[in-house]
Image 1 (cartoon, protein in one colour):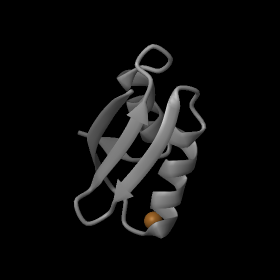
Image 2: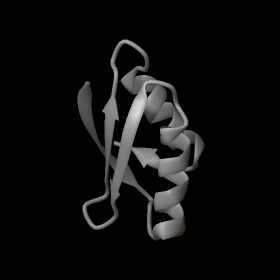
Image 3: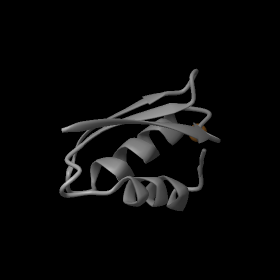
Length: 68
Ligand SMILES: [Cu+2]
């Protein structure tokens, strides 16, 4: 299990937080998603054999947020 911390721009409220959590959490291989709005971070617990960092980045971008 790997922990990935991404800097994400554009998340401003709990709506954004839930949107990112739901989308990333739906990927197979992801076992946990945590959003910190103040620090603009998304922390993901993942199985690197099942999901790639790129898939997670793309999923967040598809929701309309910028991943640094
Ligand atoms: Cu929002």
